[in-house]
Structures are given as C-alpha cells and as structure tokens.
Length: 68
Image (cartoon, rainbow, N blue to C red):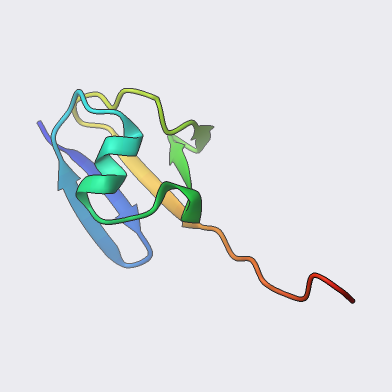
C-alpha cells in the first residue's frame, strides 16, 4: 500500500519502506523547505515510512532582513 504525502493542495504517492528524506527527493521537495508530520507529530527526515501512512508536509516560511 502506498504512502500519501500531502503538500498544500497536492497529494503524492510513494512506496513504503523508504525514508522521509528519500520520499521528499522522489517528489522533488527539498527537505529543508518543509516540516514533516505523521499523525500530527513532527518526524525527522531519517524516519522510515510505513504502509498506509499519511504524511503531511508544512512549508517553512522564512524571510526578512538579516539587519533590522
């Protein structure tokens, strides 16, 4: 059973057994641009994704001036 990864309004499917980092690469998302959650809990990008899990990505927003 594939894993669903949700980012904004898009849903991607990847195979189980890969790390979250590898799944992000597969869907062309840079790991440093998102927070990865599983069941509402923050996980690291080295976590193994299991069958049927639903992963939600939260875009990290940064900006502003280094000098204010």
